[in-house]
Image (cartoon, rainbow, N blue to C red; front, side, top):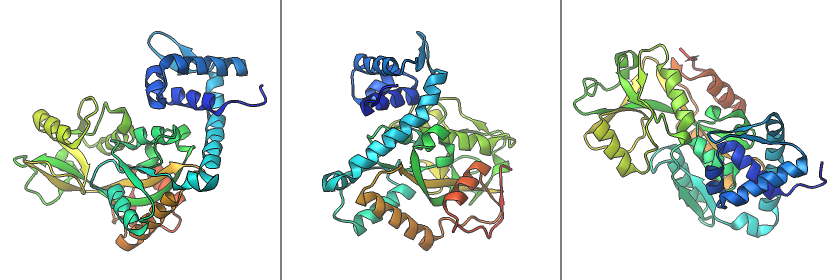
Length: 336
């Protein structure tokens, strides 16, 4: 074992481990694929172990690679913490914050943080899902995001800090002439036989698709077939209208001409939202966002669950563990 390992080599290794694809990992790190491959070969040489098995069709972690990954993440987190904490320059740079969409919990928290901390430059990003955003955070190209933390791969989640912010009520986006569009709330049972778009096929939103599949299981609701990632609001509206989809959504959702958002009920399904950032990362903008998120959660009751609501057990456990102050007064059905 060498005395020291170049953090760049470990960052290259972690990117390939996340993507399991050299071309995507190279793009993520803004390096040439040949340079990335050289870094991996150098790391394997220094460790005396093969970290990836490679074929013409697939890349996979070897047993040694899987053993190295949690240690690599810890080293990178410590390196990022040192870089962020050393001097005012590290703390004063702009904070890159993914809010997913211009509406919703993340956008509201960011807007208030800008009001409360005018001296911090918050730069918004719009990545479609937390799975994609988390990979960017670990790679150091993004600082903060919001979404369903329990839906992340455990190895990825291990490198992140997270703070519960809100239980968003889930809804369905329907065409105005849909048979259920006239209802104030749509019972889940009424969706039996329906097919809903839940971003299947978009690798950046795996945590949302997983939540949808858990909700639909045993209820006769189908998930729309995988479809390429849809980038941007205008393109989303175009594709949804052309495909004729109904869409699983949250009650705070962008306006889509000719369509309406209806809350779901029977039970009331919840989409948990946490703020996530790299473990050990220090920045005044992170502190401002955390403070604003906690204040908003308390002021608006964002962490109170309605009686008879639905939430998967992994989400309930993670949110409760991170927020021991959160209310447990209301009864919640789990995975039913």
